[in-house]
Length: 211
Image (cartoon, rainbow, N blue to C red; front, side):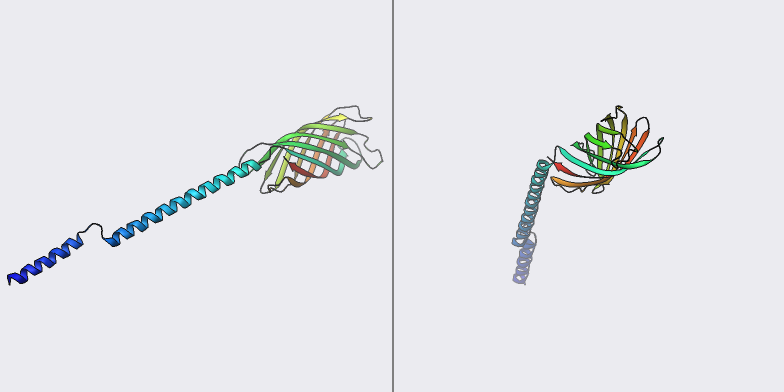
């Protein structure tokens, strides 16, 4: 009887000892697997972060510091206190510099120089010709929607001996892709405040070269 009781106590003690072992082989393997998984995730996150930094560095290196855009177009000229209207011509260009505002808005500012002839039909309805120089500001939003405004000083050319000032706006499209060469098309509006106030509405096209 005592022998049976002793054997039972010995068996219970072994079971208790096994259940109280803090780290069995199975538990050690599970902990090791968890630690290995955490280490692998951390390494993957670090690699991804490094790749993102390299990509950002390359993108920074590709950012343009200067834009040159020649443009030309034809449109309709009218005088508010002069009768008649005529076909007008303009040709010139802009030199633009980046002006960061927000990640969703691409802004530039710079100078414009443009030749403007109010009548190219030969009917001499408007004899005025100007060389215009001024400052402009452009915003490109929504993936290519281009807005611009500027103030220009108009210098009379040929028989035009007056030097009025004016305002120019543009509403058009320029793609937002990162390329050194981008097309540009816009509806250009000018107000020239001369002896008569001239309004010129033109379709203007150009090419933007990024440097």
